[in-house]
Image (tube, rainbow, N blue to C red; front, side):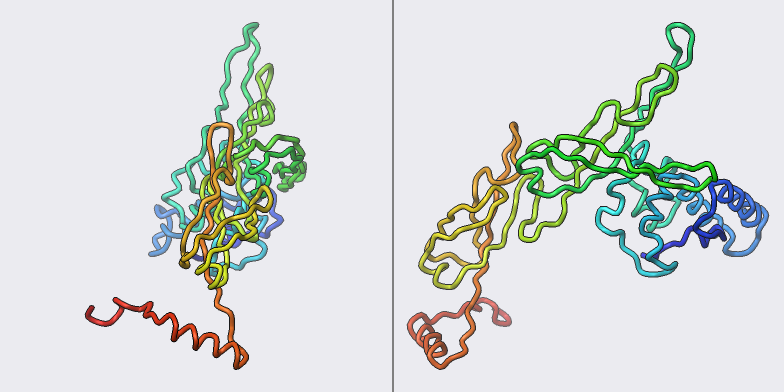
Length: 322
């Protein structure tokens, strides 16, 4: 997938105002519209123009795009950075209200997900005044696995895109305090009532929905509520059995390795995953056997003696035609 420079498509500099973006789009749209332009690539260029405008005319999408866009050149191989949109507030979920299928894979990888409904609605005030509820706002926050395992209190700062008096998109910090529920999973949301966009008239504020993502952990991986750990053991620990100190998100515990364990064997620590009051997660240990290097004559003789005393062929069944 290739990176798309939307400013280049609109023939603009990256500090263009929102009004300049609108004018550039209208000018190029007249020039490239297939009803007017009969060149063979007019339709494709017109679609590219619409895609660029879809992003840059929206202060929220533009601010998120600008966050990483300066590090890439048009045409470079591109994959979205993990959680690239973390910390940005988006009304209506942050994704396009248009049909994303008409745009490129690049656009869809960033903005083409199904958006949550914004729940914005208006109506008459009982006494005749106009009121409308503020839009719901969505953002992604990235937390550590330990925050979910124990639950935590946090203060986070989100970036709220705004258009300043000169027509430029700026981001303003928006700090909020919240409780991270014990056992929350990646992809789940925390709803903060009244923390979204301001209502008009007597309308209530919208809500803020925070989607949870996890920072990569140095030793653990996560699958929904379950935590996974690759545990290196020695050949004698696997063969003879051993009690080994194993890390968990809640602290170290003693784990018994059964005698005769093989590489790939899985052991379970019950309840040591991302558990909530209603659901339990577990920690799964997968054994990997680390073979010591034989560097001295004595160590080599030890392996030779093992070969004589415990002959085996671990490749039985792999012969061609068997």
